[in-house]
Length: 341
Image (cartoon, rainbow, N blue to C red):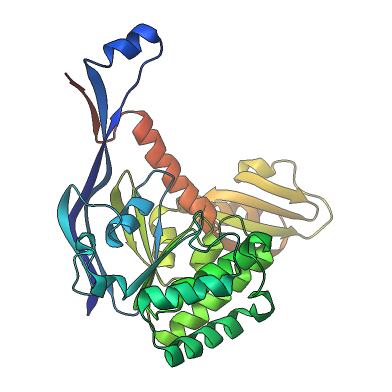
């Protein structure tokens, strides 16, 4: 059953292009130049109940705009969307009680108050029954291990501790759909891992539907079975992690261990040398050239060990984004400038 459905969803912004100088500012009172930017362009997407989906893309691709549309924060220019049967931008109370939005760069907790005071405020806002609130509150606090921090003002917490409190606040009313926008941004490795483990466990426990945006590929690899990649406001890929590598990776990484302590002087003729420390070397080789490369190096040198691996996911995604940015620089982007009197 599809719990999130998007059809031709589009969001366009008109941005005023202010020119430098006094006379240009005065002229702008009478004639203004606007740039039209399509942040989201006719997106079609279905997310099934209980899925944990990663929504990836470069900065400005339309990820956060899409989450804002789905949470009802902004209205679309055209197209339709439903979440659990609700149209988000109608902002019905029945819908607000069934989803949550967590943005890593924005706070929903009172800065100068302990988090437990904000939790009580959320109880009143969502009209959560007292016993249900206590049960859910205690479960989340114990899962995240923050009971000793509940009486401490939010401003005194570390970034990782604050994010844990933000997650508790978002989940107190037991939403069926959770939108996460960069939940681990700025966190250290330990805090990232802690948040990842919590989200993975909670999603498996409650079977809620989660849509995650993140620039940390470790978040994606640890949590998501399905990946949706958006660029220039359009969906470029929708599938599995393995499928991304198969479709967009143009190279393989070949690791070699030579029989003696020396590396061949002609190593670079087999591929781009990434690492060299005798007797080991690591090469980056075009996928289609790997069989010939392996045959040649095994013929010319004595090899004790050889492994062939895909590029790290971060590099594959970066290659794809670089291609998109090159296209954008060449003018392959759907935007236009208009002058309005």
